[in-house]
Length: 213
Image 1 (cartoon, rainbow, N blue to C red):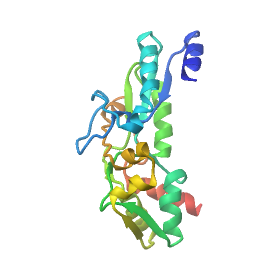
Image 2 (image 1 turned 60 degrees about the vertical axis):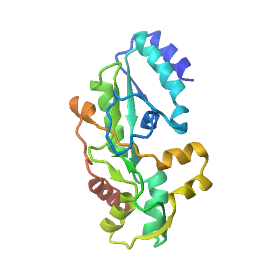
Image 3 (image 1 turned 135 degrees about the vertical axis):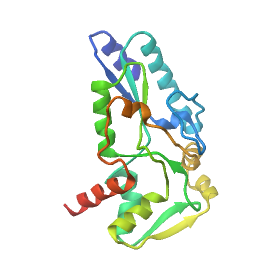
Image 4 (image 1 turned 180 degrees about the horizontal axis):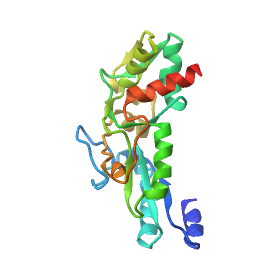
């Protein structure tokens, strides 16, 4: 599907093309934040997207002005965040968490992610990759703790051992759910992008505002 689209685009005049993938293709980062120039060491989940990214690199070499966007963990008032954080906390139910603290992740609010994609289309450098993430990484469990605190609701947690993930998810997804993913946004900020929600607290405040709108 990518090849058909990129072949059609390459036949015309294209100034910039933003290709969105997933930062998980870099694999577990450990506790050290990485840049886009770090060698990729994808886990099972990341290896699923590698053939597509390799194909994109081929088009870049051929001269197609592709900018690759790699979002971190996107959150907002929908999808996994609403299902696993917003709805159970607002309803007084337990939030399911694995391990004591959760893995390290680099989040980005969904509205900032959308704005960053538009910004790349206008200002990104063809042939380069850009991590779309906030500056400060957080622990996975910080999502629920921050939302409950700002919403003035009690946080009830059903905590399972991290190893239990492998019994509840496929092997590919389990590897992703336990791996740290810490990415630097220096390159994105270097082309002038500014976040509306640079911290988790500001992003959660926006979500709460949307709930009461």
